[in-house]
Image 1 (cartoon, each protein chain N blue to C red):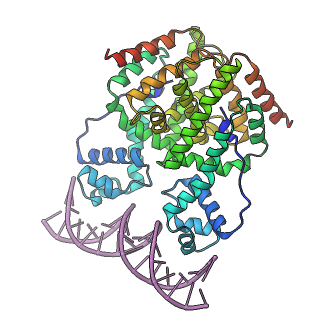
Image 2: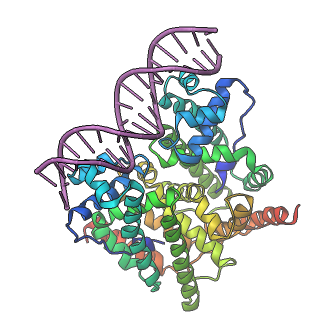
Length: 220
Length: 220
DNA sequence: GTCTATATAATGATAGAC
DNA sequence: GTCTATCATTATATAGAC
């Protein structure tokens, strides 16, 4: 459920070009692509606006470079991780070093919100990873077989990324100043609890839902 | 889980001012506040850019008017709805007339994404509604008592709105052209299924999560 | 590679005619 | 109430000096 956190922070490049790119990642993650200006990014990176264009050609191309740096790295990391029993390790690691991931997570948030081919690819990769985890869990006996694996995996990914996208609200709702380790700590238990002990005490809600969906599909 | 859909579409006002406001709601919902321009809104409404400002004073004030029209209405609707057993009706109604809700849902999506006081109030009201539904369900015996009602309600609201925010991805992941009734039909069953039959076959994931959270809280 | 200066376009908002 | 015309600002992007 928190598999998204399973990625390494990547940052050793100290060239000016890299500094501009990192400032852009922070800006796009903080306020989105449209609201971020080349001037602000230049100021944050300590260079002139002209130099930003000199290095990347255009604001759009700068975004593409940011996508390649963050999303493709995260996607590759997600796809290579097919060990389903790492919840504890991943969560522990994230809670230990949240700042290393904060900038990348903010960028991912922006990317899945606006229209972006890289954001699409990331979401889809995350769904495939979740499908693998589900299949592996069923095989190992730790998870129950679900009726529609693709739809279930898609739903779980939307939940997981929804928590990231709406993190500000989740934090506020729990009385926290910002979305961070405190919020993750508070929400993780209840989240896993819902996946362990069913919320509903019988099948009536499930049956009602299936009735409605069936009516809609058959033309009622 | 789909309580957000429980609101009536509100649209009879045919004054020019209302036409401008409706065009703005559509634009803000489609591309967000920053990326929507006064000129585009004016064109969509069939008026001049100057008239938009004449009626609302500024782009920010126009947004406030849109918030009042969509979010405050939806919020009031959510708060007055304390009948917890309406999943079937609400879902049926939505599936019958999705277009009536599409514009409002898109606007809500944008509002909870950017920083917006009205969006905050909407999220919070939705959490309170969900807490009521949980409490009522427990009292009626249809739902199980959870360990942390506020965090659980917050998590459920983030899931529900996450589905809305990431609707484009959810639809694409299921092979649909756009997020609509087909996608809702496909995802509703698996979603309710997860709330009815637990995903995990035992408590080991829950225990692992609680161990990590406990370690983090006590300073490990 | 990096800057300053500037071209060009688009933005929110105003003024005044009708 | 509605428009046209325009202002002031800000945006991306370019040109050329260093």
